[in-house]
Length: 556
Ligand code: ISL
Ligand code: CA
Image 1 (cartoon, rainbow, N blue to C red):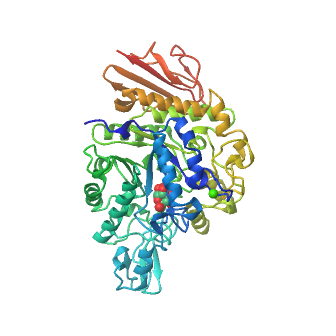
Image 2 (image 1 turned 180 degrees about the horizontal axis):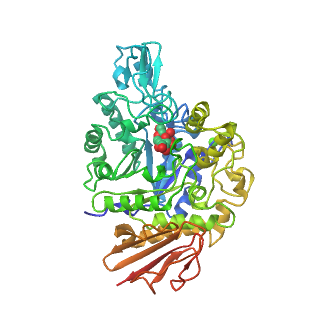
Image 3 (image 1 turned 30 degrees about the vertical axis):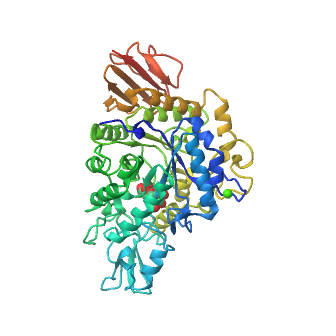
């Protein structure tokens, strides 16, 4: 199959609210992004995934859209967007929009009409059901933000489905009019010149025909997985591809909670019938608390992580394409989660984590600040939190006795989505150079030592290391196309794998621990050259120190 441009791309995710504020209102905005496009270019990324900038009441920080074809005033105007897009293209950067069409805001005109009357022409744009005999919800499906996934609407005496906030009613994708509306809107953005879409929870759009109860979690409700990989999801994505996507040279990535390797071979098949690639969630959920889920006390197990990532690398080989990530706006900062954010090991472990991900097969995604080694925030109180998901889940866990108040604060510091939404740390000036106003969310106090200005000024910084990883991907076929083989599968500290492409071979060695280990390089890597690494010694050094990472290259 002919190589596609996005197979050797590196994507940089911008969360607009927290990237750069240009007008002093404390909220990041589009002109702020335009001012800093050169920074993203300097890193070496060639695609920007822009989290939503559409009109929204911000119940879920823009993932609740009330008008898909206008820009949220806090972020600027459509003219600001056009200026940003043009400048990005002039710099050789592509812009991929966030497409949130599993649901809209309840303030969208479609929903206002739908909820007004059972006879509305828009009634079946959403999913309405009668109460049970006793007046309770139609089934035990749960919202990702805590509680039931159904909200009762007095006006028409029915419940509507919302897998997220009650202000995010799920669209009814079984209705061809919904598909027509979405496809027309997508074409409108693509005709403006955007370069693709990241598709929010796209694996949930086709709900099971019967609305039967599912297996409940400790909360007493199901997860949204009852709807993942639904009966018609691939029909709808193939229709989207035929009617819209196939008409453009674009990149698409599905956010597909609940996806399996088998399902990903459809969503992200190399036959190009659906999407280019997809984000799997298994590795992100491996360290979930067995009772409390994501909002609990994580149990990190490297062996489980290695085997899961190896399954995805080999499972999609030759059939589909992986989107590679540690971080996004929904996950805690990886250097705090699976590295070590102490002064002594933060930069070293950040480079180790980057080496492990960026030497794999697939398209790597970098979340803003990850390239600096930005860390989780030590929230002082639950009142500081902004994120609807964190607040909703902690509230439900406290109410049901799954967490005490002080445990909830500890969990927030470990797991809150707010951890990756603290303002980007540009420099050591007030508010980390993010705003001259009052930031909408607390700036992480460690900004004076962790910021882009310092990182760009040093040759040994995390930023420079990411830049080198990206430039290696741009010039080495073995990184983009080589096969993956996991080595030392049961080693509890070392993540070791090899990549092979014809005569070119890489050995990737990453120590995910503080333990000093001895590792004898397998043939044919002994005496190979070190391509990149976070330590000064060469392959003769069999002692692998805390968070050491290096890549050996041989051609024979
Ligand atoms: O990680 C998660 C589930 O395990 C959740 O944080 C997240 O809500 C889920 O991955 C879906 O994410 C997407 O849809 C949500 C929005 O809140 C997230 O920000 C978005 O990435 C609803 O639009
Ligand atoms: Ca602003």
